[in-house]
Image: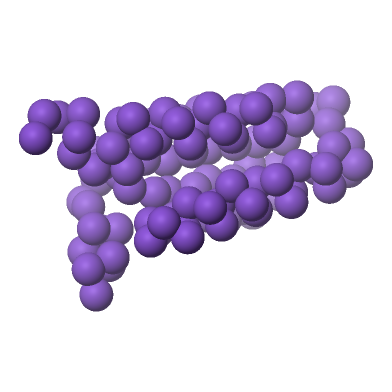
Length: 102
């Protein structure tokens, strides 16, 4: 197994663009929910939630680099005109691997 095939933790951090409005958010919410549902229907775990500033959020998931990049591309298509976002490979304890085995 090469290093790109290893599942690693990833963090997707997003915040609402200054010029976005409520209608923009209402338009993307169902699409993002569907994307997350598709991810989880494959037996993969994703934790997500908003920060208390009400404009930023973070999703944490475990994936190979390829899977993470593919998820990010789909997210980008949905959210690019409404959100600012960044994908980070997170060098943290692989807690999602442990939880997904139980």
